[in-house]
Length: 159
Image 1 (spheres, helix red, strand yellow):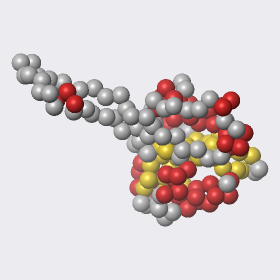
Image 2: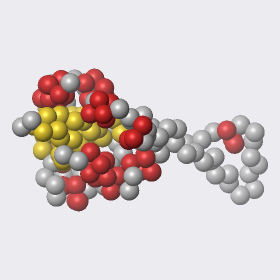
Image 3: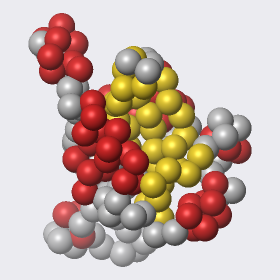
Image 4: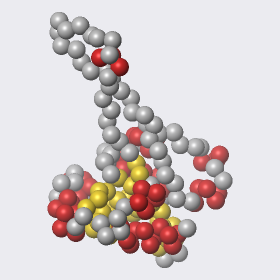
């Protein structure tokens, strides 16, 4: 599944992006969610204002800026890392990870990697408890706890 379909995003075609930009950390901003007007009870008349009231599902795929804005003392769960960017984006969509999910690129042993992290936790203990609340399929990838300070360093070393 394409990440654009999963998140309702507009992404530039790779061929339209310079090689330097393709390697730079990217923040992907979600478009406005599709909305539906509230349901009207049987026999109830729709008011003019009621048709304008909408509910939106909060979905976002965060990037480097969001990660760097997190308190370096806090923790997150790293779910997966791969050398293929599309593979990590597909992982996010396949597992319906839509809340406080971010991906970033970094260097490891001189090679470019993409990592997916989930959540913001004030303590290591809270992060550990969150692992069991993840979907079973995500738990199978054996998520591990990372402190934002280490992620910040990793991002800055890649720039």
